[in-house]
Image (cartoon, rainbow, N blue to C red; front, side, top):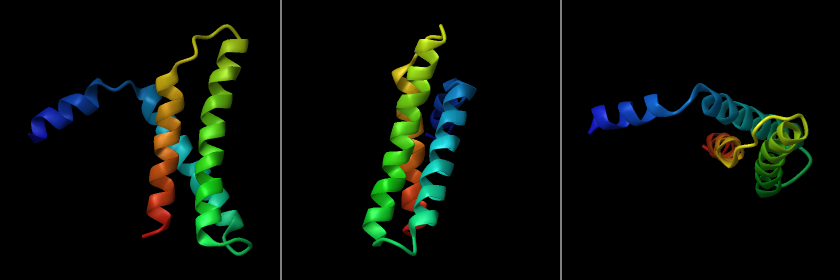
Length: 90
């Protein structure tokens, strides 16, 4: 079972990991900056939303500059944002 998980993780490109980490950082930074001003649920929602918007904006930027936009990149950024918010709520 562990071997299967490791092989699946190894098959993911490095680019997806970078998108994931960026989404995590964006969500946590936004949520931390808004922490004292809003309720916890609002900071979590805005942090996650910021990560989603950043992922979509990056793919839009790629498309406008001749690179291939990938939905998986935007999804990896959003999933990183989700994990970032979940880690803050622990």
